[in-house]
Image 1 (cartoon, rainbow, N blue to C red):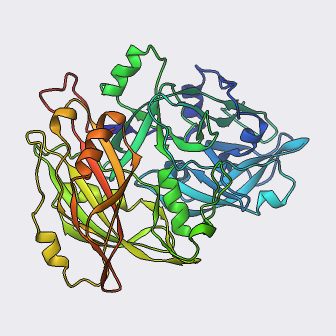
Image 2: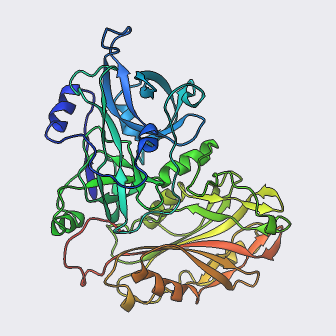
Image 3: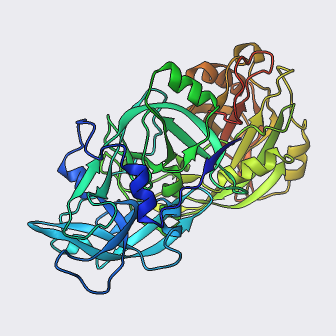
Length: 484
């Protein structure tokens, strides 16, 4: 299990010692990283003095945040706020032809498990004369080797900064090395992170990480350091990189935004509050996955397992009323933690948003067998008299092990199951090509008890997550419990 070492930022002296060996000036000139990007990012600070001196307000610098809409909402890392110990946080905002100004922010919601928080500036700086902008969020995760760019601001005088001092910008660029699961703090649930081949500095926490292609935010900097000795460190050394940074995917922030009904935008200009498609305005449309994360393969088990759930996709796009149809710990614990962060575009009946149930299957293939049929027909027997449910598996063979034993990772599929329990279509939501072909081939052989709506058999949607672990006999280098 990868773990993080905490980096306390409550002391400016500590920050100064750690940052001083490296310049904080821009290190990249990638497209989409101009003044509009800089205007969306702001330092999180706390004023030391109640009144300004001739050099402005004296403050303590903690980390970064970035705006995600014109209503003044921001995203940052939750641990940045914890350094303030419940004190009122501020952000430092630019004014045209004037020194930066301190603006209060309120904490809207924080997810300490996955180190993400949503803030709101008061008053809204987009209604004032501030030089501000907002960034668009990605719903598709960057794949391995995808180029990304982090962007952070910090005061030029790190030891004793004042508001009249200049702000310097740091833009470390790199590419995605790999995904893995880790506990960001002891006793917390697993969080999926990705690593990119560039070192980040204390004070970069909460800064946006942006796709060089779409210019959307794909994550935020996790400024607590990974311990060495992992597979990622080996890969980094082979690439002769100077360092490594960890990033929390924007997935977890999107889950918080939907939970609070806060709008955000993607690169296409479409908001999270999506309008109905005119071509389908007179019929039922199933919920569509917006942002899904897999579950890690439990490190302590030696054979495979399954988890089967039935859940309600609420009008907000979040999952509710999650019912356990099959599965045992530790697989069940991992699956439940994952689905708590899932988000969807909700179902529609005509122009109306409606709630509907879907089936969810997590499969963790065993390393010694190629085919297993989980629980026979027991799921169907339990669900005969249920008036509302998603489709549930009857026969679910695993992917052929000869095609997957040398790889590890996860594949997520969205399957449409008809009223006869047959798979009508399969969409690959995410997954490496080395695992996807075998997974899709196996999924075509699955059979289901059909979903039910209003007491009658009906078409239904099923999300299938298959998480692979490298065969012990095929592994050459010890790894953590990463599955990506």
